[in-house]
Length: 339
Ligand code: ADP
Ligand code: MG
Image 1 (cartoon, rainbow, N blue to C red):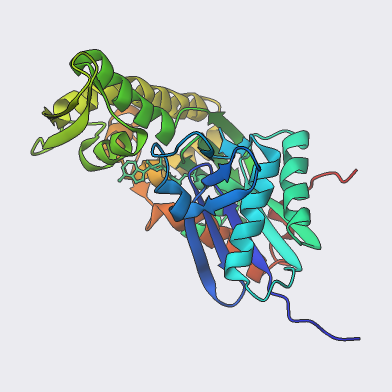
Image 2 (image 1 turned 45 degrees about the vertical axis):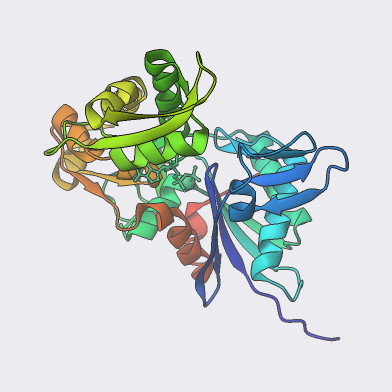
């Protein structure tokens, strides 16, 4: 029998970004989780960065969607198509990957796990392992997840904020809320509509959030020029706003994230609380980059707060580490029933 070359991969199928790690190679793909498809033929016309450039600029026949919503697969067929296309991109030889380790939100149901597993299998995997995102983030950051010591991870992605206390290779308690990067972006869009009668696109709102958004007063407040469509005159218009206003706009979702962290801390068993008091909490995911969020959490909880190095890749780096050392990490993998 011919022995075919097959590469094992680790995937972080995020609501905002999908990253793929290839065994022995490292991160080989990092693209937005966006698909553009022809609404009449239902054929995918673009994925990732190429599809992202089309968002808000499509016509009647082309639609862009984000198949992973709120951290789970919202559109099964399209998600599968996206995963398959992305794997094909890193694997042009078109040989199926034998093994896939794939990270999933810690709070998802059996049915949702099954959907992820099926997608991976349909995309060619013979062996699929699931790992909880906060666990993957902790491993990616380099925390010793096996030790009898508590660590708290807060992963703020596009769709969900996941807060998990980890010890002895397991998740002791976890909190997952559907308030994260997308809600912050939406808050910026709503702010301009309500206060300036200006309609701005999602991409523009996200840029504003990343450039001048904050969770605490900045040492030097910033100004930003914003282009949108005036709702009254109906024509394009440019205005200037300050980071102070954008911070106000973000207040509600930021408060929701802070509250969820506090609830999670209240639910933590005392021995682990003591560990966390010494070690502090670790932030990962793109939302960790919101200016002043670390300081704000420090202020509200009196705990040390650290932002992971390269927070956007923490989950895939951890998932990759698990792939490289599968037998070692068997304990941290999610046992998901097969039907
Ligand atoms: P997911 O795991 O859901 O795919 P990511 O961890 O990739 O999410 O994070 C994506 C989110 O992080 C997006 O909502 C994006 O707007 C946000 N983000 C990225 N960079 C920044 C930044 N500098 N400031 C604030 N938010 C950011
Ligand atoms: Mg993520």
